[in-house]
Image (cartoon, rainbow, N blue to C red; front, side, top):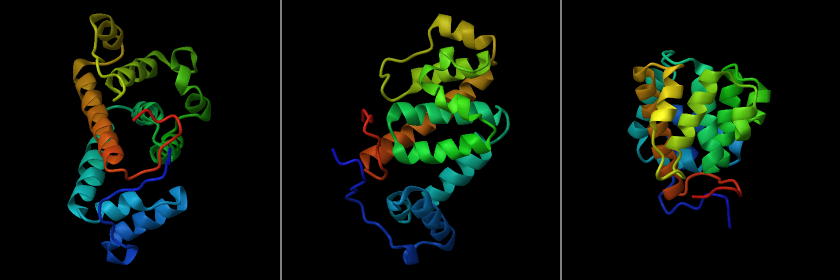
Length: 186
């Protein structure tokens, strides 16, 4: 299985991209060695800008839920989904957000790892929300566990975050925009 992207969608060259996307193209080339995601999103810069500004800057990084928790959740989903592109970016973002390397290394077995109960609960919710868990739902038992750490409003906010991340994962895999890991189930 070829893990590199081979999208059928038209790609814009770096020179055809808006200036702010040219900077993203440079960053993608340096980190991933591939610029497919940016080149395809150059066809719809308004969608790219919405995702970065409205979702990430205004919602994901709002500060209502601590950055370490949202970074752990995002990285857990990227690990489950097998997105090499996301794992590279999300690992750097997690480290920048104060997540220790020991936690990143222990994500596969978070229940036994160096996580507090709030982090473990958020990661259990990520397992429920993952694309690979088609029957995932919050059971009364999981809700009782989560309710000791999160308000229902925070759970809704985390759920929306994860839904967006999972929806984008589905889109980038369906459109073949990013490199996958050999473990990618999608």
